[in-house]
Length: 155
Image (tube, rainbow, N blue to C red; front, side, top):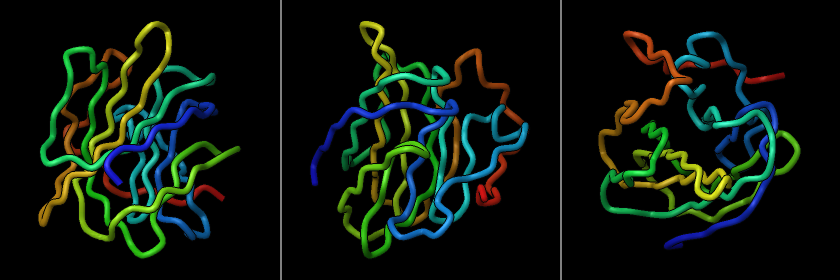
């Protein structure tokens, strides 16, 4: 897979990416998660979106390095381990299954708004030692001193 795009609908101000087959794939959010823009646990990550609901475009791609464009509003990197079976991306109402090569990645999430269309890109960069970091924060984020890298599954 080099690049795959689709349209979906945002619900509850979040878009999730998780390991296919995960029994409870979505995450609960606390105040720290909201402030940092994501809720992460092994096998699942949910990112805060630019608006609470509406249509958006999603692109998933493999890249060689972390790179953002000048129109990027928000950029967050988290570690993600893809296991056999691939991943799913979407909302609580609908997800799209994507076949991804197994491996350990730095997952770069970027948010842009072009011509009033929200666009979310998930870039997978192979990495032996992935680290979480916020590369670009917009006014909606209020970053904690240390990123919270644990979350509970939403039940």
